[in-house]
Image 1 (cartoon, helix red, strand yellow):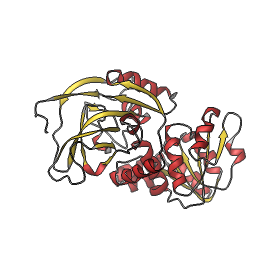
Image 2 (cartoon, helix red, strand yellow):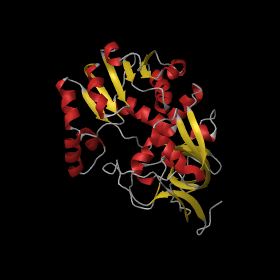
Image 3 (tube, one colour):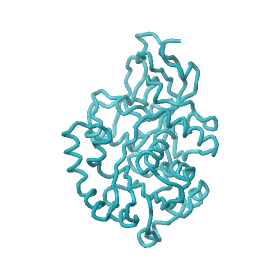
Image 4 (cartoon, one colour):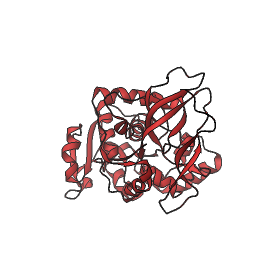
Length: 340
C-alpha cells in the first residue's frame, strides 16, 4: 500500500538552534520514497544526548541542518511501502535503523530511508527495546572495529560503562575477544558483570587512574576533561577513541570534509592530538554513522547472546519534550524511548 500524496503525518520539529529544549509537533506531508528507499511506519524511537546536541547547535560543524528539522536518530517500525529497486526488504518487515546523519527524523509517524541503512529487527526484542539499540550498538561496533581495529586478548577500558552505551558495548567487545574493564556507580555493578565485564570499578570509592595501567584501548564517554587521565593509563601505541570530546584533523580526513573543515578541526583537536603524540599514543574521535550491513551483524549478535538494552523510561509521542528534558538532565539509567 502506498500513502496518498496529500496525506499528512505528525512530526516533532525544531525551528532553530536553541538552548531551550523544546520541539513542536507539526503536521507535515508523508515523504515520497525513491527507488532505493522504504517507507517505515514508526513504532518507537530512541531519545539520545545526540538529539540535545543537535537542538542546541553543538554539532553544527559536523552536521548542519535546514529548518524546520524533524529530530530523532534511531527508530523501530514496520515497512509500509518499498521503492521499485528495493530487493532486501518487503512490506510488513519489522525493521530498525540509525538514520543517515543527513536524513534524520525518527520523531515522526512515517520515515523514508535508504534500504542500505536498515536491518530486520532482532527476534528477541520488542519494538520499544529495538528502538534503543541501533545508535549505541553501531557506536560501539564502529569504535571497536572501524577506529580501534581491536585485537583479541587485549584490554579495553570503558569509563562510565553502566549506562545505555555500556549495555551494548560490553557484549560487543566480549564477542571480539577483549578483556573489558568498566567504571560506574555501585548500583550498576551486578548488571555490568552479568553482561560480561571482567572488572568493575566503583568510581565513588576508587580512582581508575590508581588501579589501571598498560591498557590497550579506551572508549571515552566522559569528554575532554577526562582525556588526559585516560591517555595516561594506556600503554605506548595504545589507542583512545572519544565519543564526547573534540573532533580532530584525522576525523575530518576520514569523513572527507572540505579543506576548511579539516583545518578547523585540526585546530580544535590540536591540544588532544599533541597530548597523545607526546606519549606515543593515538587520539581518535567518532561520530556514529548509519550502516545497515553492520546493523545486520549486530542483530545476529543481539539474538545469539539474547542482549537486552537497558530501558530507563517510555513516553508517549505527545510527551516528547518531557522525554528530551529527561535525557538532557543526564539522570537516565538506560535509554529513554518514545512510542508512536
